[in-house]
Image (cartoon, rainbow, N blue to C red; front, side):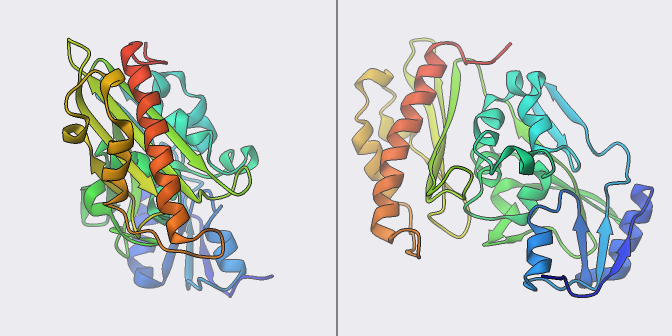
Length: 294
């Protein structure tokens, strides 16, 4: 398979890249990791007139972590973020989710920010950003803007990144003390996109009762489906929560579709199972003080 013809640009500086994207407009695509874009080109599912390769730019492969959270640059590879001790300490959910992304060879090349812009509703990174209430920073020749996760994912394979814009980084906020996270999914084969998946976060108060609980579900809607289940948990200690009732509340909020991999009914059932599993795991981590936190 061969991609359709395009003009190739390899800018040396960010400003040059932004000018190339501005001139290309809707006919331009950004090449970072290329793990989603290259297959689309080869299968003729995408046919951009201009390909802007940003791998020559410096300063976009950073991973900056502090008590507020983790900022990941546009060229930071999945594997680098997964292995980052400072990122894991500030936001363990990143490593918990990244270990489930495809295979090591893909994680060595693919980028976290590229996965967000690709906006696949079956992917892990969009669910993580949505659950945490993070944001994506977009740059253009007109300046920069930060787009909240709630507004960034517009539909299947569609993000708020406009023609002429480059996603330069993403921010994943840290959680309060006594918080825990978990990511659970089921795929037909290891490394495949999830048939269903759930990211969860739980925060406990000083009496070790649930003060906040949220889940983000993948593969059950056009974008990650975030559900706040704090009220359903009843601000109880985790051991006394009706987790099956919490799962049913989430199942009522999703609208899965059937395909060749799973029926809608099976995806709904599986999501309920994963909600219980992920929330229990997050609650255990919260009670232990947050696994992986410094």
